[in-house]
Length: 573
Image (cartoon, rainbow, N blue to C red; front, side, top):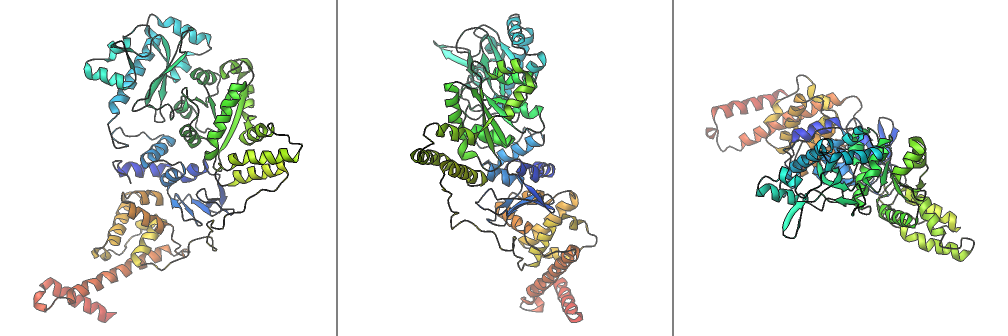
């Protein structure tokens, strides 16, 4: 699973992550004794059977059997690849990703990232030093932006002229080709020239903080007002969000993100203390945008103009959101007064009033039902029946769960007719006992399970050692677990499971980590007992091998002595 990502990095990452925090950001948990519970996000159920153990750093559903670590949860719930899940967890705990890690098969894009970083530094330097930059600085000051905000967002200036950046960075044909590949050059009439000219520059960062693209805004009335980087190997407008990296950097906990339409809206709101605003890059909101937002916060507020075009854009955002609104996720809509944008409104009413408007944003459910109700005559039976037929296709797009059930109830209330659907007969049911049944295990499997669930057992003194003579996969895994835990006593269950790169081993270790061992306070005694039974198995296996020798003359003297010892042990027992 780890591929080219060093296992030591995964171990370090999982030792820093709290699986409870990771899951609670996406699925609200409630404490139940030493663990946390919720309705399982992976199958439809009414009674919570999904548990999260802070001690093991593991989750498990007794209904559908889903289980794993924080990495596994992100891969399943957020639909991330393994490298993406590693990156997401590393970002959440502020762990720097090694540059040597290659996250995907294909071309090495590090030269592109390095070039984009060079370009961002050069644009930033031009804003401070270029003779023509006084106009840009004056423009930003007129918009109410301080030098600190310009620094925080690494804003820059592309001077007038056709080849300023190209002359500075385009040293040789290879560098020119890389500039073109990065979207920093344009081609026309048989020649190349700088894509961004005489514009305020906004570097666009990915969630790791790497510069992947740029946006440029004119200072006068030229068109286009905004110009973005084209699609490149490292930049995809339908996936990136301006300001998300800066928001995550500025705020430890983000309870909501405000999605606005432009770069200037993001930086203007930040200037007034509202650091949780992000913007799409000249495109409509996509599912990829929303998945990225919901990985950061449970609540997304769409901010649009209050005119007809703004409300139409809001409705499209609603349609995009519906399939992604699993339990714990919320979407709301903030429609601005006519003629206002976030930049002008926050300057007019101030931070506090703007925050209050964000808190009072219209919930998605209210937006949906109010728009559809306006299309029918709610005073008639025919009108209310029509509401059901209009709302049904939208509610059907919601994932199964509490929110969908509540939307069904609200539709029934508004229409005056009970239309709730029965739970499918094939819905997975949890085990009657609420947990996995204890099973008979081989000694080596029980020893591994005990070690996974009680890692401190590895530190016990005077543990039996002769069982290591066995040469089988289980014994080798058990020996390796003991070796790892003695070197790293702080490792928890999640780290131990993810330490193995082999999928089949991780799968079996995950099952053993969840096994019901019926342990009260005798885990030390059980563990020693398992090792002693393994020693006995080792002696018996050795005796069997020796007995298979045809004649004593075929045995070495050492083997003869071992056989005598085994018979002596048997006689004394």
